[in-house]
Length: 215
Image (tube, rainbow, N blue to C red; front, side, top):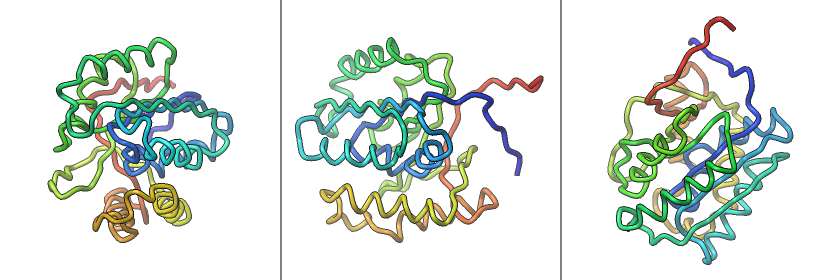
């Protein structure tokens, strides 16, 4: 398995349409980044859930998923499932975030996600973060939209289990959902791990990137 290692990674932007999207799609990657880079800057923007108990869940969860990091979380109040009608508000929020950040990495939904809120946010990312490495995370759902990823972050057994534990601990509002369980999260991580020649992994989709092979 061929790997590329970034020479510098001090700042990350994490984007989600809903509270828990970031943690489900990239929670293990955030744990990996923050545990290995104390003081990492993480700016998170979530489009919906603001002013509800879900915002409290999100803030506590992202603090736990980013140990030792300098974390700033913004949660907006766009209505769930109605993102296309609120495109301008979402675009303005991303532009404001871009004005105050210059991240080395952007974590966001992937552009071919079947959920219109995820997909709409993903399509805004390259219009705002034009010169940044953006990794599109995946969220398993009943739509059956899992694809063939091109980038993997292997997870140790301990980190994979920690991700599941934190998801169950911090998102109490989601525990009633039949798909929100340990088997689903670890099952997908195990499949992606097989593809990455590892035990567990998170997978991402990349539209384009620039290589610097001179070193």
